Length: 421
Image 1 (cartoon, rainbow, N blue to C red):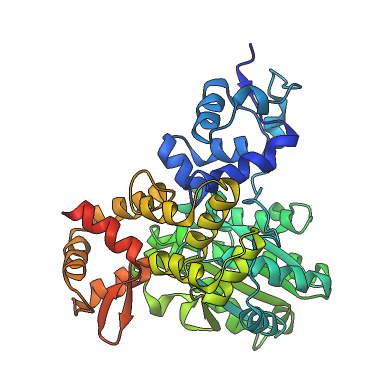
Image 2: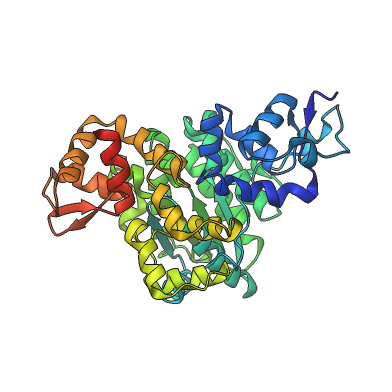
């Protein structure tokens, strides 16, 4: 019996889809629930060998028959570890799941066509930020732009706590995504310059001159830096400086930056020392009833407006919550919408893992927990302390109504009311 095993190539798409189907919004949520490293989960989902027992445990958590999905050509020497691609992304965006947001896509596209542009895309988790920018970057590539989309979730913790290590990782990663050789040793001189100037020089002398076409760099999950104040402050300040440099140095006009992040940890940033107060901001909103109906149709659900409103009465227009409901009803055709909605706010419902994640966050912030109790006890909108109002809204649990707040949707009200009581 081999000590390690991997998913067969023909089953990779299936196991990736199973992550969200089993109620895990992101791969890192699955990792946390299993008590495994994110690296182990990424390797499993991308067809690289993992420990035999880990393979079985992950498969069972995703309700997969581990014997059926295991590759039959596993090499017990595990030689593929040396060529593991660390930038393998989440499952690719499929048009089947995507609801076009033409007006927002147009703003993003037009912004990134401008020299030296900086685009900021923000929203609470799972609102479709990555789907949106993937579509926009695809269109720009078709028109000859060079693009590199780097997810900071792939950075090692050792890199996130040291500025020099992080900037070296960043430069190497962008180069690899562009298919360029690593020439860092040629341009990086720690004895004669600072790490930020070395990074600046690597872009100005090597990465940017490789072609006359614009270079669009998308930095996703940038909230990974929010808990690393030194590296976060310096790197975000560097991005802001690059954006401003495009006004004076012609070659930097080729660079266009996209910063994508969830707003859950936004409060930890110093707004005056980040790129989040420059450039063009896009904050994604929830789906409209028409967009919910469009998504339902993509899943083969011929809903009338009454059924759309029935789902939205519980979850609002949150893209992930709507998508998960549609996917579940498509897969389990014997389950009715009414039955799904009845169990949705409970531990037996399809949103259990998603809701539990927010409950764990709230329990670590006692002031926010008390503020949430106040909101839940109010029949309508209510006024709470400004900081908590801001943070709970960025978390996505409440929505702002002037200087007051109210629960964002009935699902949250029912779930958290039960937990707090």
